[in-house]
Image (cartoon, rainbow, N blue to C red; front, side):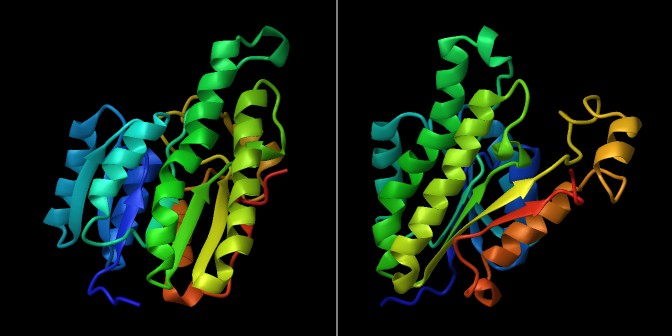
Length: 243
């Protein structure tokens, strides 16, 4: 087993609102953070620059999580010198419609990014991670994995992600690798500000507020820590008791 001075963490979708919060939290916890973006590498570079300015260490990388060949090629170059020991599968999209009116393209794209993307990124990284006898795989799921009107594609992808991560936890526990999901509820971001009114929040969220990006990031950072080594195969809701 090779010991590395500083563990590296790859956050897919690291240039978005939640992804950037996770990147900053992990950098603050001492990881060398690799900020991933699909097309908008400039956004990833801005996140990395902010981390570096705050005293952390960050790099950027760009690839399409839905392209298995590209993922394997880019990731192989990334791990030539040192394995990734923390993978946060955060890249995700939604494209909502009732199932009866959903196009095949809407269904397929959401599955490809949210579920197939997890396999494309995780599979090339997992055995190099296992050889270090220490690793953390964290999937960002959603409370929508329980099922949600107008989100059959998104719910199916997130439920599949949770099942895949749980299966991985059973396969890799003996190698010192934990695998868990976090399932955020309504979290403050540019997308949710106009989507949920005060009446919805009072009716459905017992703590009577939206969650904060930093709260989700803190949970991810804990699951990536040494202290979380006995937690695996779990999906942890962070939803204010949402019902």
